[in-house]
Length: 195
Image 1 (cartoon, rainbow, N blue to C red):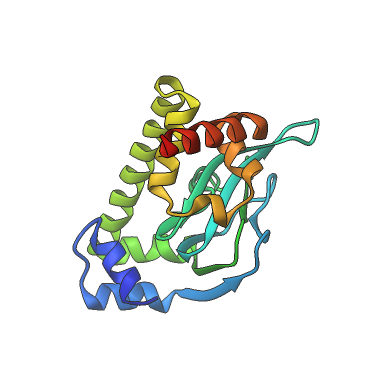
Image 2: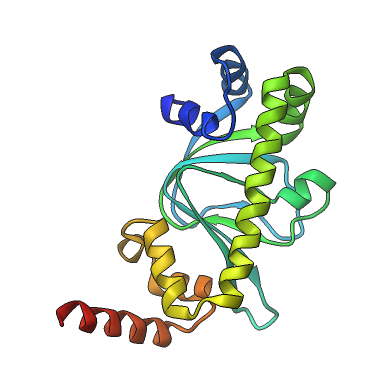
């Protein structure tokens, strides 16, 4: 893990260098190619990932083969099938890279043991869980209260250059619309920029 990761963790809670070094000690740095699955539906997950660069997604596949993006992650983010990790049950979602990604992988059982041994890391875990819950609640509110254009603009604000990083159909799936609808939204926004 690098200085950026240290700063990321400190955005949740102050963490000392010795505690951070313990996290580094149980992590493995990995470079993953695009479209690499890190967690599969029906498999009990074992790892939590700190995404330091690239784009990942969590998605659900319907019986007809259609995929629905539940979440898009960009750096810096903690990525993993948390329900499956916490309950030690099979994941209900597939987690996959959409671009080349750099991650630090931590075995969740090692992380939980470290939480029991180090108060700072235990507090970090609580703060990350709080953030995940608030992010989940915000996403649900967005789906209920914002129209597709507003959701798209919010996503563009959250992830710079998202349109050039991942395919349009992935963005549309996350927004809960079709690729055709997204094309119309993008065209309308370009027309407004020209005026």
